[in-house]
Image (cartoon, rainbow, N blue to C red; front, side, top):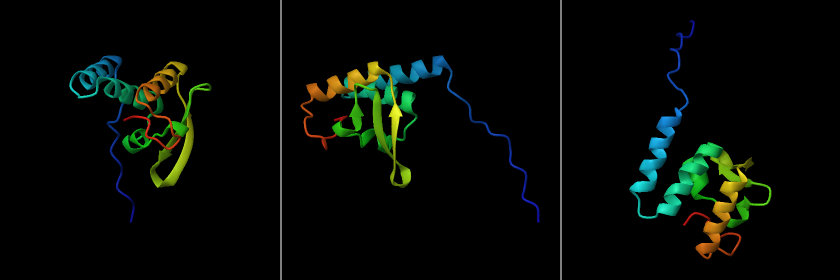
Length: 108
């Protein structure tokens, strides 16, 4: 028996306007404006899953080379490049929130 034909995908990239609207909404309605701004930017640059972003630790950030180590689904680890600007903002955020131990959560 032949497989049924798949319908064409309706997936598409977000337009710049849609991405701007998402970022503005995320930054304007939460309790922690800094984290609310960093998370969408991290997702935009890395396309990581929610759990990967929330599971970031200080040891997972390499601000000199602009890299983050992501723990993905299925116990997969990968180093993902990010802009040096985002790496600097993440590092400064960790410093302001007194994240000092390598296993401390980065986005808290």
